[in-house]
Length: 380
Image (cartoon, rainbow, N blue to C red; front, top):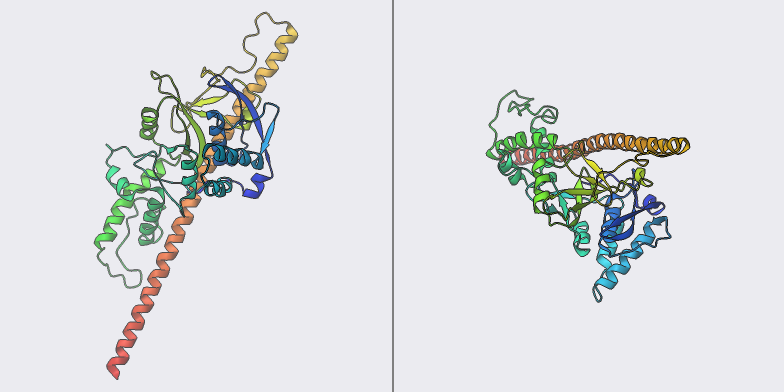
């Protein structure tokens, strides 16, 4: 599953704004992200900043890809002297154009590698845990099927195969169980044991994918909250996006927070983290550097002059507008991500259908050739 991000060239050509925050008693500068920013690369950089592995000068207001990649290279060289750091550095540019991450539905830390697994190696080399919450509940009836299917890519391929058997109707309607009647002869045939097993699995898998299009389940969310160690900083893959996830040090609370890197909050100092409380972000709360619920800029104007009240009221409205704009942008982005996911899934299904059709035509042709050769042999 590839993240929809800009090309390497466009990412290298732009600068990203820096925001001042406090974390663990230190004054830091984190990197903010616009709508099309390379989320994987910026998440990696922000985790290294929060951990204190790399530092950005207090006088800087923006950074570029080249500047950040040099900081990461220096960190790797200093942290692991004598180690060949060329493999992770060669992978780094790919974090800008989208990583191919394929999560398993049964483990929050398991991803099937794509290609040579370079993207996973990068996180491992930097000692940044990569997690997800797209987990099926072990107590649910669909668990055995999802465990057997394994991962997202395999699930899409399974649906594609069954949709091929259903002549393109299964993707549109879950209840469109493939008909065994031949379109050319009208004669019914018997499903093979393998085909029947795939159909039964697909009937379970497709509703699961449709109902978890945001790529997180409540079981996954609760599992992350229960298993991550207090004070952990990890990279979270959700909704085709990689963000910074932090587990509160308060053992009684066990709260999860994602770093608020959206550029709309660049000048909103009271918004630093977003509490992860549900799977669609509808009930999430913004908090400040002390993890206290954010208060829009302006606050209580008791005792102010009329001019002061007017000025502060104006600022409050600006803050409120920013909040509304962000909420709307997030809603639109979630809808766009859902549509992109549907398009990717449909594209994968069409590609698999084409492969199966070509395979079927090839087998049919070979069968006819063998039959012809057999007839020629009999004639002779």
